[in-house]
Amino acid sequence: MTNTISIRKISISDEVLNRIPSALAHRFQALPLSFSDNTLTVAVSADIDPLDVVYGLENETGYTVEYMVADKTDDLRTALRRFYPKLRTEGGNTASGLFQQLLNRAIQLRTSDIHICPDQSGADVRMRIDGALRLDRRLDPNTLTELTAVIKIAADLDIAEHRTPLDGSINYDLGEETVSLRIATIPTIYGEHITLRLLTQSPGDELKDVADLGFSELHRNLFLDALSSPNGIILLSGPTGSGKTTTLYASLRKLREDSSLHLVSIEDPVEKPVEGVTQIKIDSGGDRLTFNKALRSVLRHDPDVIMVGEIRDGETADIAVKSALTGHLVLSTLHTNSAAGVLTRLVNIGIAPYLVASTLRLSIAQRLVRVPCPHCVKKRRPTPAECEEFNWDANDPDLLIPEPAGCDFCGGKGYAGRTALYEMIPVENELRKMILKNADEQEFEHYAFQQRNLPSLHADGAAKILAGLTTIQEVRNVTNSNERR
Image 1 (spheres, rainbow, N blue to C red):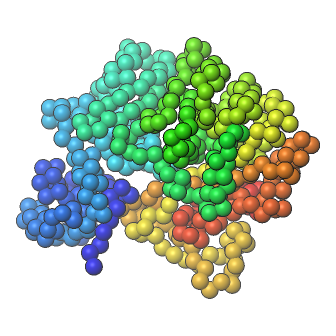
Image 2: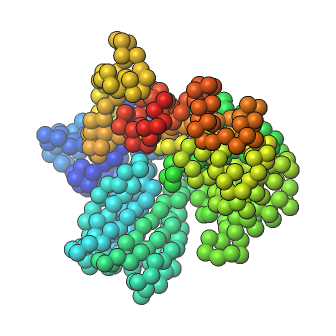
Image 3: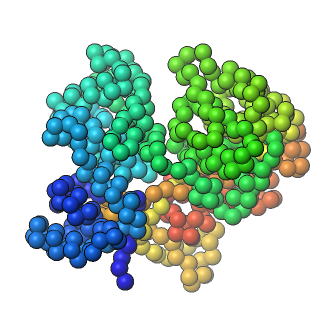
């Protein structure tokens, strides 16, 4: 039986990529995956005879060649274009060519941010992949200077200004796709640190479906039930980079299935164009169009659903609550550490308890955790202490948990991709009574996770470890000790 591989879930080092020249890779439509003991493993298309590729590459390179079939031919072709870009600059060795290479590589590796970090002898280029920073390459001082100039010119920033933080954006054309970037610079003792956030990786990328968010069956039902409400507020909480925006966009995708709904979003920035949604970008650098002003204006345009990127203050919260009271469904985020914290936070920023009780439909907290690489993951028995920590049955003879290992396909990290952990608190009659009595966060948690036996972040993590979707260390990294119920 032929081995297949998902090209979207692999990370390939430059050392392996350099085993095949660009022209050869495109000619044979072969993507190198790993190299060991003079044996090169490549991904090939199901549309061509793999033996022709094997014999051709062995004659051209002198390596022993083994193959795996890409599960999707289009993904293979996209990966070849990104890892071996046909640069529009002369020779590809200019700073502009390097910039194109970095962007192509970042897109293929599912990078959320690129960091260019200067030091005494040049700079490190680091990419944040699945939430973790990885060193991609070193830049010498001259290349760093040229690359900085290319990025600042593309973002319409003042290349002569080195002592003030600057912000800009780029819509960069890579030939067959466009990538949208948010650029931020900050002066350091060794030069300008540049961060590039990839907002849109490809216009062809679809929004995630609710089914792809990593919900358990219970959480999916709670979420869909809240989305079906004609009015009220659904609030998501979690730190920066916990996937809240992805969840909000999946909500819009689900809601736009009903063509009778007028959907409006107010964002800073608009991270992805969504067909069927009226999207409004606020003025983050001034006060011409703030969240408050946009939300007040939107209410005059007869929306059914309003997505507000973030509730930042009492005024925005007040308008959102009043919008829910007047028959709108409002989706937004709030910076708290837990689902119970959402309930107390709204009161703390000035919303009357009776308004919170009557408008809030669902409070959600979420975190992102890495998924073990399917090519190298190991299985082991948990220790007695781990069984106690995660409330597993230590006497279960079939109890096995994943342990990351590391291989060429995941860049030696042991992980490939991410999923989410959730805790959800639906607001029903008993909880409304608690809100009106000004219950504290601990009381809400006790009611939700002990009396109602809803899963906390830690409990959801324990279930996903058993399902092979993440590891003990990942769950520990994103949950606090007091969440281990």
